[in-house]
Amino acid sequence: MIPLGVRVEGSYSRMASKGGGGDAHFTMLTGNLLYKFPSATVSPYVNGGAGWYNAAVPATGVGTFSHNHFGGNARAA
View 1 (tube, helix red, strand yellow):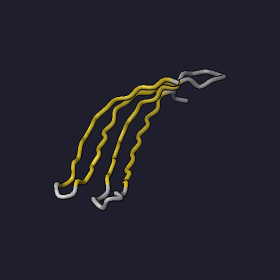
View 2 (cartoon, one colour):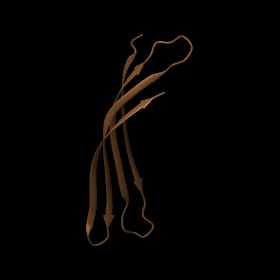
View 3 (cartoon, helix red, strand yellow):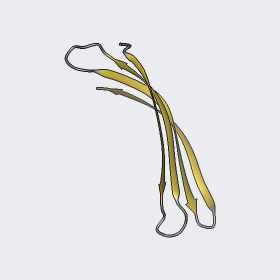
View 4 (tube, one colour):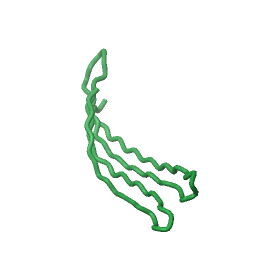
């Protein structure tokens, strides 16, 4: 079995506004590399990658504010 893997995740969320100003939208897309250490009893691994995150929030009478963010991540378990 190959101990190296690839993980891609995406998400889209919409949150309704109670005030009638429009819905907020959140989008994310991440990609990670995962390495699993060979072991007979436990399954330790490390992973790391990068992602794109977007938040779009409407403002009544002004338009929509949209922000893109890029980030990295790392994990060991």
